[in-house]
Image (cartoon, rainbow over all chains, first blue to last red; front, side, top):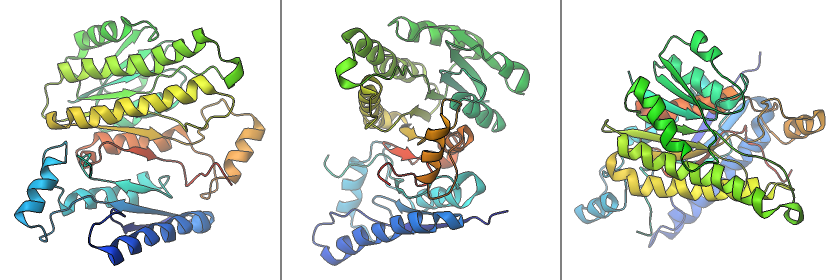
Length: 113
Length: 235
């Protein structure tokens, strides 16, 4: 029986205004994880990135919070648990076939609204 | 219990039948639309309430007839899974106007109408829309590939316009999926291009649909999600 391991990384929008080193390094991280999905797949390892969208982990100003809420069709701001539930699915036996993806768990948030 | 309406439930080893089984495992009652193959065996197989309706979704009146017939038995639906599809493979130069229109009527117009009807009848504070999609580059399969691209935009519009009603909407792209249509050559080629080392099964797509329909899946919306073992076309 093959062993299955899941690996996932948290990523972010590549266009992150006034945040060059962070945005560019997250773009590169995505490629590392994509390489892992392709090169380590034969060992039974799945690899994905989770993109949580704007997530209320304590860093938001009131302006950023209201702007994120307005741009999210599901009508609230993402919470750490929203990303965590997707990570839990990916790590479960049911999530093993999802691999090589950048998965957005963001309430249908759009930057350009 | 919550109820889901699935379209295009046909062959027992198809994605829609697998999704029906997966949702039944979470206690969902099931309204099943079908056209080609009678899935009434699921009624005996599954321990939830199952209603059936046969219709041709190329007909503009079929979505309303389908909702009327199935909700008469099960009441309002909380999830809509669009799995039906028309797929008659022809290249760019061989695709007729009639065939293109039939693909768009079935794969796009029916999906839009089903989503409209779903939103109008929803009674829960949350709803789920899932459509099965496909790679848009589908060689020698122009009408199918273009209509699936258009379907994605319908579902993306649903995510944005219906989000304020608590409805999430996503597409699932299952990658090459062994539902009985593959030649040995296609099977081996798909396996070679899939890093996880096998060919996708209907249950692989169904497990993602089950997650999206569960309370845990509600924040994922407006996405085209690939459940394909890291399959890549260009390997």
